[in-house]
Length: 421
Ligand SMILES: *Cc1c(COP(=O)(O)O)cnc(C)c1O
Image (cartoon, rainbow, N blue to C red; front, top):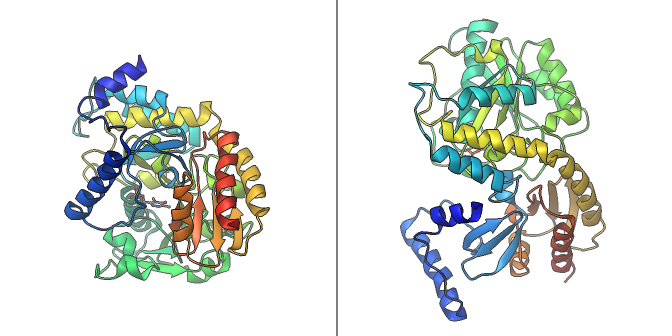
């Protein structure tokens, strides 16, 4: 029934790829050529043209299958094309998809309530992409700084961590430490200050009476799965509290099960003042993000202060509600903890002169190499495992959390084979 529905919807105009090998190769090459000719070149993808996916596996236009060890940067923690999320999406798409926030819809209140029950935060503000949710949190922090903390208008400062990744808008890249993210895109908004990541005392030293917030990833994903010293977030939380500074955790990649807890900040036993989520909030079906916080913080927004045409639309909300339920029902954070500990142990046991270090938490492992990571990712692709280098020398391993132990073992076997070849 589901399959029939799916074929009816997605199967209609998709040409069937011939089984003939030469024809298959030309299909991939032709699509790559089209993309190169007509699309902006702001990415450098591996040359695998994916046509469909299920669980932890993706299939290319040539019929080859690959184990996905990236999970769309942790947006498909629930696995590709999860049937429950698919059902929710299709059922909602048959009813109403977009009302705009000019009117109310019957899904948004339920998403609010379920988010609050799941996370303990009083309020949420829905957006679409992760970067938009980060911008939303920054706006909330600034307005809270002015209206609640009493900072003079236009003077609020927000602290950020070195090597942060929070998205690609002009404000966000303006406080990136990655020169390439900034080059050519200035001028940037003022009011942000960078502190070293992992050093709580540096946060204390950087705080001034104008500091409204510290924005930080509990574990820095794009920087290479950088895990701060134990207790870092707990100390930072205490310092922020002492100074009436909001602690805002960007859990867009680290949250929703990836590190073996629902949120990475739980490892430190703290509760940030605000949390930003995205990516797996939709299980990969749709861009959905949100800021979670208190009435005191999100209450600063008055009608007209902030908005988004698509933010909080009923399709997004129906998808997000189900994506969250799947995380809980299938115990995906627990699964991540268990399989992650096992995978880390296996990775640490690999003896290869190419490996500089291995680190990880949950099913989120960084393999830091002594040389460039790209050729390793290319070699893994040839063996049927997809992962992507982050910066030049780190391979990040982040399979969908639904991966079977058998498949995980097979994937690690391929990694071991490539690294010891
Ligand atoms: C991916 C990511 C973002 C940006 O999300 P987009 O949906 O790509 O805008 C922000 N912060 C972190 C930590 C991320 O991993």
